Amino acid sequence: MSLLQQITDRYNRNARLLPAALMVLPVFVLAVTAIPVAVTVWTKVAGLAAFCLPFAASQAVRDRGLRVEPQLFRAWGGRPSENMLRWRAASTKSAVARRHQLVATHLGIALPDETTEAADPAEADELYATATAALRERTRDRSRFPLVFEENIAYGFRRNTYACRLPAILICGLAALVMMVLAWLSLVPLGWEQQTGLISFDALAAVGWWRLCTQAAVRRAAEKYAGQLFLSLETLGTEPQQTQLGPT
Image 1 (cartoon, rainbow, N blue to C red):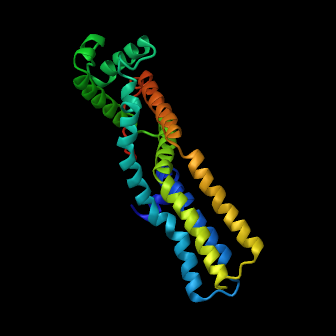
Image 2: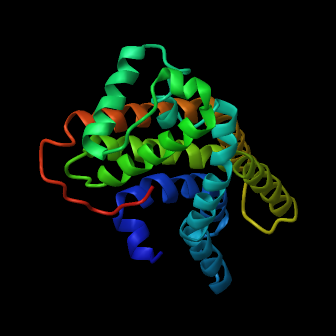
Image 3: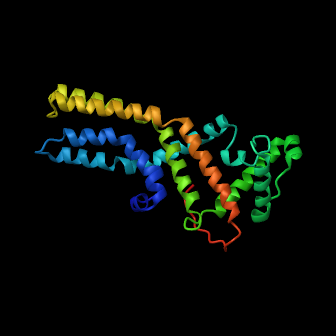
């Protein structure tokens, strides 16, 4: 993916580039703070490298998010979107019946009733996966389904930040350690107040990653996205379909 696409595409910017930027923020802050006023060529290069790190890391962020996703779904007992079609996971069976009806009407996929699902849950889950995949493809038009797109961004951001939580905490610790070593060797002009401020920043950032980027936060975002995805069935057949491809 080109640099221009990373900046201009809203999904890539918010769900991939922003988590990467947050992950390497301690490195950027250290680079900006530690570079003296009379910079040399190499410190300029180091500052530029720190600025470019988020763009280089965004693909790795996406890959980590995709790798952790199956583990999350297994821990939750399946994709939240597929759970919304399961009779055995239903809190309100009338809502499941309504979704089944709309899937059959708008997607042309006949889903199993409660008895059939109970007899063969694995086969039922395959049909639910097929139906949700078809619905995602039908709701890619961002202008027609803006709320689906917004919730997809929120889920992508939460998933990717959770996937990068441990590397981000490690970066915070390394940034603080490197700063202390450089200051001890008098390689950077940092006084005690600046050192204390940088250490405090890195510590707060690490705590933020640990407390805010949790599996529970990812699940809430995933369930909100799934709910909005199926709400789109209510209006799916009211306008001509205009498919606009976008990221998932």
